[in-house]
Image 1 (tube, rainbow, N blue to C red):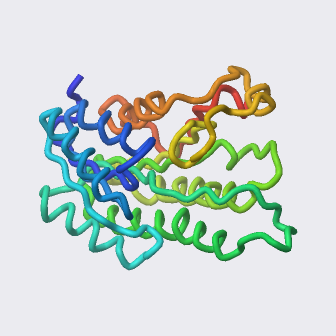
Image 2 (spheres, rainbow, N blue to C red; image 1 turned 90 degrees about the horizontal axis):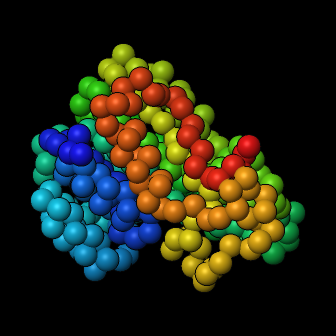
Length: 249
C-alpha cells in the first residue's frame, strides 16, 4: 500500500542490517529515501539502486553521526536535493557491550564514542530535522529493550544511551505536538544483524528469557517503522513500542 507517496524519508545508518530493511520498506510504501553511511560506500550505493528499482528516488550521504556538527549540513542536503523532509528514522548506532562498569580493562573510550553517536548524534539530528520538517512529520528512533529491562550484566553503558533517547523523544513529542509531528521510539529485541557480527545463533539462555523464544526478524521492525510513518499513526506520539518477543513482559 503506497501510503507514503510524496514523502521524503531520511534513514541514518541505512547501508546495512536493519537500516536497509527500513529504507526499502519505506520505499515500498511510496517514500523517496535518503540513507546515511559512515564507511561502506558500495553497500550504500547498492541500497540506493534497490530503492530506485522500487520506483522511488534514493540518495546516499556519507555522514558521521558521532560528529554533531554534521547533522545540520546533512539535513540541509536532504532538503536541497529532495525539496523537503517528512520522516526521520534514527537508526545509526554503536553497541559496545560485554564489559561491566567496574572492569579495569573496559574500553572507556569506546563507551564515550558510543555516547557521542547514540545520544548526542541522535539529538543533534532531531534538532536539525525538527527545524525544517513538514507539519505532520514523523521522527522515529531505534532503541533497545535493554533500555527498560536489563536482564544481563555488561550492557550498562549501551542501555543507558538508549534510555536517554526515550526521555528525549518524550520531551520532543511535547515540543513538536502543536505541529502534529510525532516522535516515537521502537525498541527491538535481539536481532541477528551486522551489529552482532560473528553471532550466528542467539544463546538459549537469552531466548528462554522471552515469552516467544526466538530472535526478532528485522522485517517486523521495519514494518513497524513504516506504520508509525504513515497516516494511521497520527495520534501515536511519545510512545515506546517494544518488539522483543516478550523480553519486557
